[in-house]
Structures are given as structure tokens and as C-alpha cells.
Length: 172
Image (cartoon, rainbow, N blue to C red; front, side, top):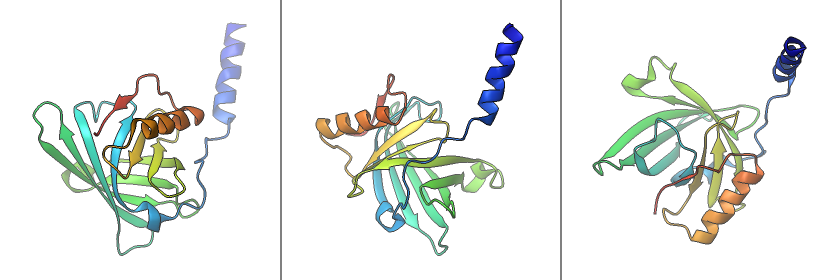
């Protein structure tokens, strides 16, 4: 019986439809520019990052954007800069594949998919997550949005099914 239940659960997991990015028709011209991470899920890569600035800029290719992430470290206040390329999904521009540039890129193999699950109508904030929603980020145009805005965007993240029980508040 236990094996049958496990097999049924595995079959359901393998045949369940993939989660879809919640945003359609993302206007990349309004999405590009400077963002500040104001909240995120805990993750090993950013565990020492107390503030992150993201510069999302168009390149000379319609399906590529440049990404520069400046992380201010908690331990010593130094800035660490990572550069990546965002390849935009041809069918849904709310889906990106970020690939690190330089020595850390491992020939383009070091990459991760990110989806925009929600954004403000005026593009003042955006919620991004991995496709399986295990890691997520809230970006804002201001480094120090109000407590009400932080609360509203976290509530929206919860509505999207993101685990906000251990939120890491950054920025400000």
C-alpha cells in the first residue's frame, strides 16, 4: 500500500502542469532601469547581502538584457558586483534566464531561470521567483519604500504562494 501511494504521488508530481509566470505582456521598456531588493527568501548565495541594487539594462539584442547586481556585504560593508545576461523568453517576456558573465559563467552554464510573478501597474515594484517558487525576491524602484508598501508587496507574495514565513528584509 505504501509503495502504491508513493508511486501515485510520484506520477502526479511528474505529470502536474508546470507553474506559469503570472504576468503576461510585461513591458520590458518599463521594466528596465534600477531596482532595489527590499525583501527576499533566505538563500545561500545572498546570506551576507544586506542591500542589493539591480541595474537591468537593454542591450543591442532584442532578447537580451544586461544585469548588474551590486550587493553590500553585512560583514564589512564592501560592495560585491556580479554581472549577468538576462535572456528573455520569446513567448513570455516575464520569463528570464540569468547567466553570469566572466570567470564565474563556466562557459554560460552557470544560469538560473527567473519569472516575474507580479508587478505594480506603474512598475514601481516587482516580485520575481524561481519557477518552482523556492526562492523569491521583491524589487522596488526606491531603496527605502514605506512600511505600508513593504507590507502590501509581502501580502501579494503570499497570495502568489511564496513562502514568506522567513522573509529577509533588505535595503533601507
